[in-house]
Amino acid sequence: MPLVLSDPVADVVAVVDTLRADDRLISCPEMVLGNVEALLEVVTKIEAVLVRQLRAAVEMDAAPALMGRSVKGFLHEDCLLTGAAAGRLLRLVRVLPSAPATEAAFDTGTITTAHAAAITTALGTVPVELRESVEPHLVARARQCPPEEIAAFTDQLLDGLGVDKASDVRRERKLAQRGLDVGKTLDGHRSVTGTLTPDVGAKLDQALALAGKPAGIEDTRTLRQRAHDALGEIADAYLTAHAAGVPSFVGAPRAVMVTLDWHTLENELTDRWHTLPDGATISPATARRLACDAALIPLVLGGTSEVLDIGVADHEFTAAIK
Image 1 (cartoon, rainbow, N blue to C red):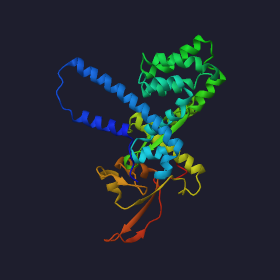
Image 2 (image 1 turned 90 degrees about the horizontal axis):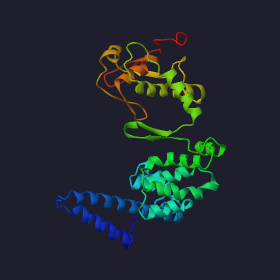
Image 3 (image 1 turned 180 degrees about the vertical axis):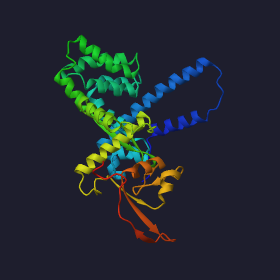
Image 4 (image 1 turned 30 degrees about the horizontal axis):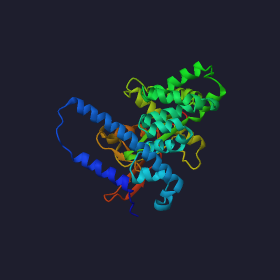
């Protein structure tokens, strides 16, 4: 279904197109910096309008009615925003009405989208009875400092008010901010971001340290690469212990159907990347690592990939040795 524009939005689009087409050379430094500052202010005001329009879309159930999906799905799938960017906008839609001073400053362009997000996040750590008195100070601070300084300034305010930063209220607020986002990128890769509570973070640190130890003097993986591989080992261990229907091959975490000679797998598999059944691609080094402790099943194929013989699964290391 084709979408329509209001007259003011259509006018903004036309003005922006005109601005983009203006290729006049500007040689005055004062004008260049003035343009940058003015354009950033305009961008902030447009983002404020965008948040209000998104709030209307949520209240009207516009995306489900016209697109058959949520507003976040519309932003992600139709407008091609990242999931994180869509989530940040919709969070402002949800929380700004409870922060009127912040919303007013955002609407007038005196604070940016990032400032508004930082203030609303900081207010979540402030006791409810103090938010109304603390919020104007955060807005005033946001007009003079970058967004990343808001959290520390909030702590200073609470210290000045005699609020215990380790109080149950603030601990509960911090706990509510916990979360983990795993986004799927190209070729099946994953991008991981999030905030862990101290206890979960400590357990993860310990598990990664144990599972990510160097395999020996020939292990050339970086610390970051070993942490990545350790996370895979941790997932394997959990799936082996808890996931129903996961095959087990005498203690081996996986089976490898070898359709090439062992010498090639061990020594000559250097350039080709390989595709797993779920579509993910793995490097030659990963293929060798997966094969080193797997159940190895040799196959004899005919000229047309006809299976002539299937051998018995064998292990370089038995379960007892492992």
